Amino acid sequence: MSGIAIARALAYAEFLRSRTTPIVGTLTIPLAEDLMPGQLIHVHAKKKSDGTYRVDDDFRVTKILHTMSSELGYISTVDVARTEWQFS
Image 1 (cartoon, rainbow, N blue to C red):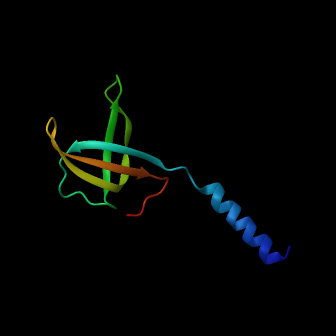
Image 2 (tube, rainbow, N blue to C red):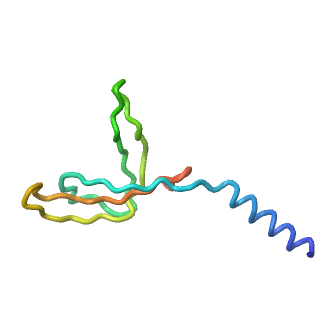
Image 3 (cartoon, helix red, strand yellow):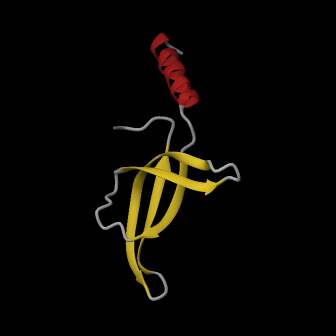
């Protein structure tokens, strides 16, 4: 293996080591007509007994679907993702 190939392999291994597994989820909320894919939102979910939230973080919207339900009215189903770092 040449020096360049070794350097490339080491750089790629370091890149993979520093990556984190994204946290993904789906939220169902009342109609959010101005919400767009790519937008950064703050999520509070899974309230604990001490009043804090298990999920209290910023997430990036990856997909949004607006629907009308006879039981719930207009709702938005939002897919979100969170990684170790986010683009601003």
